[in-house]
Image 1: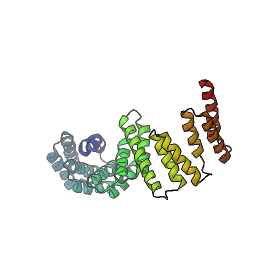
Image 2: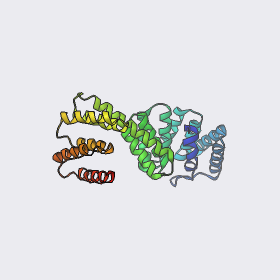
Image 3: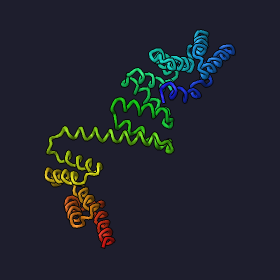
Image 4: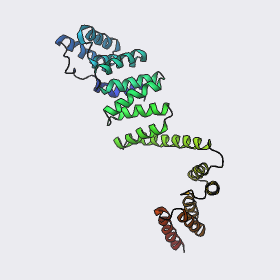
Length: 280
């Protein structure tokens, strides 16, 4: 969904509400404002802009929601620089107003100003943690900044907020994959003989369905650091999946020698016993 038809369409019902208690409009200005809202919702942008400017010029310049709606007019036209000015005015006039912060972030993202977009989006999430659109825009900002951990955090929250929305689950999986690739790239910057690098490579090969390469990488990890935990456990799991019962038991015993109280190793040993018994 595009910025114009996504953010704006969903938020129109949230940003055209009643005046803030701090300032009331006269009956005439309220009527003008209402006409502007109707025009904005109908896509008559010139008419909406004229109405909102009339309200601002007529004494409503201190009202955050009027500036916010004028910002939406500019945003729908793709005039994001002008929209940013109005959204910033709206946010300044009402520090608790979520919508201008969300829309400000969206326009800054459209302008490619990712670093500037994140603070207002983070503030929008802080003010409205249960607002899915705020988290979605922040997640997109994190992705643009290649902050995969931040993107994972927001998509995880979205999955909890809207568990029936498949796009969130898909985006979360994609963010996890990007985070994994980033971590692997960071690990590859380590010396080639690093135990952690070989461990990470082993897990990566295993996910790819290449157990032979995974076992080789895990073996190199044990040579680099014989006391590194969980490596022998991973090797035991691979051998168990391939019905190599003796090899699996040997790796579990090696894991227990490193971590004697490993509940995972003992549970795996019981699983090996059960599978081997069933295979007879």
